Amino acid sequence: MLRKIYGYDDPLNYSKYHYHREVRLETFPLVRYEDLVMIREEDLDTGISFIGKRRAVYMEWKVIPE
Image (cartoon, rainbow, N blue to C red; front, side, top):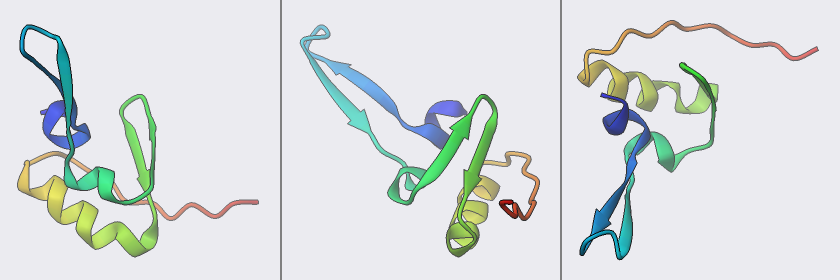
């Protein structure tokens, strides 16, 4: 599940080459911390639709910096 959300490095040719498999969450800026992903409000619809397709649980908060 985490590979589908965060992307992963795929070793090719007996680990001689590495190819990074990107996913949609990597196409816009985000902050990752342990099991938490923070995305901008402008990208919220895209992020929720992507995570919802994978049946992952998500919560939504509005962060207001001080």
